[in-house]
Length: 95
Image 1 (tube, rainbow, N blue to C red):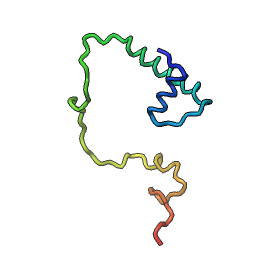
Image 2 (cartoon, rainbow, N blue to C red):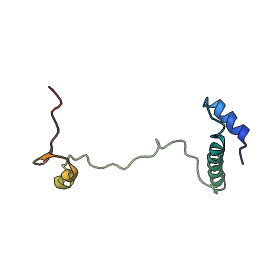
Image 3 (cartoon, rainbow, N blue to C red):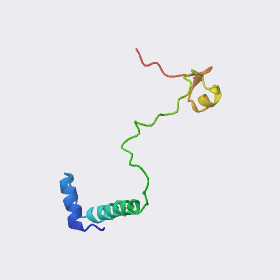
Image 4 (spheres, rainbow, N blue to C red):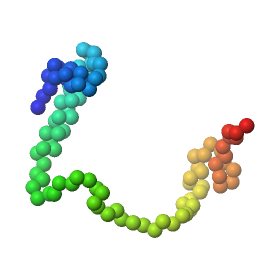
């Protein structure tokens, strides 16, 4: 499917976007590219695959909720502009 300039202007009007005449060819190319990707997706064989309405029905893997310091404070503070010991040094913000 290929969009013509009139269709691009119509889409812009429906989206309430102001599009200059100079922008139409660029938008036409971008929209045609998006439609090309959609056409590629339509060619994928999905027979035997159940539709998925959402991921809420799937259970996520759980892990223990353990508080740690990460174990590598020097690597974390390596890019700090200023540090005091194993902490970030920040300017005072309350007067």
